[in-house]
Length: 133
Image (tube, rainbow, N blue to C red; front, side):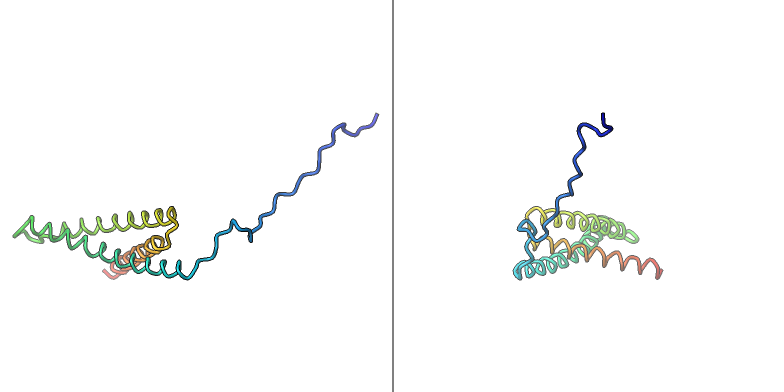
């Protein structure tokens, strides 16, 4: 009798290799996609500026019309408008990125990047104002 097992275990198989140059890899962006991405970035920046400036002005206008003659009428609406603008910017940015990924739209993804740039610029300016005061 020998001490060798009756059914030897087979040697382990190496893991499958990944072919990064296969057709399943995404194609590089075309010049048309780049152009649409830049258009989306411009659209996102413009939309972000409109939201960031328009919501506080609209809130202050509504508050000052409702509280005519009061001291500091419109200040509460301005602050509420700032909070609403921040929320709208975050929601619009998330929606642009999600819809852009689902639809594979370069313009929507670019709009998301443009809105994200406006959020970053607003956060940077708020930080600078907080330090300066």
